[in-house]
Length: 195
Image: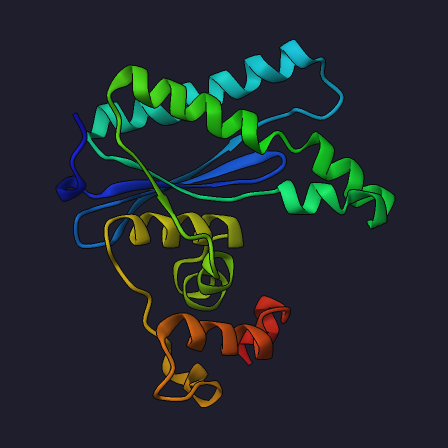
């Protein structure tokens, strides 16, 4: 039912919201939005309902625009296994973060509606979004990450900006180049990156 030729809809799933970006077939941003999810302090059934509502809105957009859904293929099992050695606040956030429930609800609704779900490698999506699109497009880091995810889903590769080429070597693969940039400026704030 959905076609990559129409563009795609990329999502970046976070603890309390889902950032959504719509792109056209040339990879240009058409529209962006944030779907808030208030899961903290709610019962299991209330969380399920909130997640189902968000999944329904996302898939409705895919059906309406005839675009496939693109999301990251994340795995939190390693982080959750190391949970006992993390700060208490991080432990609580990871246990309340219902990533598996959210992705399962989205995939179930997508299968029911005939929407293609494309999973992409999550490597460096937030950092690429922060370095390339936050300043230029005036969006948050999570919205920029969803934009990068949407572009990855239809085959676009993110070129390294001129100002960051000093951190990379020519013979490196693109993933190695983004890793090198991440080591240098990955933890920097948006303002520091602009400098």
